[in-house]
Image (tube, rainbow, N blue to C red; front, side):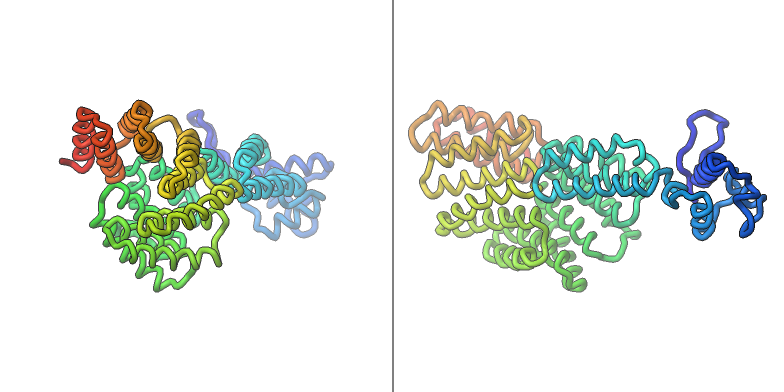
Length: 441
């Protein structure tokens, strides 16, 4: 058995799992009023029991089960220090927290995970404790507290994890960095797992991680690498032939095609991914993909704006009922604002742009800049110049804290065009300069 914990005092003996098991056996034996010989007879020798109790021998599973029967205690207690009833309570509480997260009750889920982590019985249950911390990171992400989610994930990444859990942690961490516009860190996390001679063979989980890495590539403007990696992911998905791999690879290939101006090809990839996702995916993933598909349709086929608007109105309710993050919910409101603007309902467009912006962390997010820019255009279209100028100027506050990226460059460029229409010549020049700086010019 492995090391349970290490003392910080120099020279003090490291306490191993075998020590703890032996100590529990000794404690229960004494509580039962038995000697080592009485506990051992007739199956074991008293010297063997002594070695187990002192941590010098690691009992086999069969011996542990025998000792649990003779001591009239649960096997779970000897191994983990908790009774079967306590273990059942922990697993039940963890199940409730997961269910709350899946049902979109994200604050309730976060509370349940935090309460569970305060349970002292969880301390020695490494796997369950890691499950709980990972769930809490997902709940923080869904509540919009991405920094706290990142902190937990970084701590987990430093532990000894199963291969599956290590990939999951990397995927969510990569996504959290990407959604925080920390694209260099997102790429570093993904490449740490996927690039190099020691990379594992492709699996569903690795293709999904690769898809997250791919989105970080194209968001920061590395389109050559994005095109190459998109083709690699599509090939991997075709070989695997599994729904998860097909969805992840096709969806992100769609985004790359969209960025490079192949709109209809992008929709074809996206619709293939969506068809598979609806049949096999989880509610959160389906909701997020549906929103992104509607975004692509709105830009590729503006003549379908009314149908997209109706679908986005339904998506608002769908997002509220699933464990999408606060940033995801902001995104659906801002996208609905665009659709309302394109179909002429300016009051609704303003309402949803403001809701979306309020859901975001204060400044430092491109989506907030896009909402402010849309509000500037709306007010400018009805002659309310002062309000238009104020909202357009707010774009600077949202974008300035962000690192340079393709998305920031695009938003600065659109801001420059809007300021030019509003007659703000100084602001126009500054915005064009910022757009050029974001692409290294």
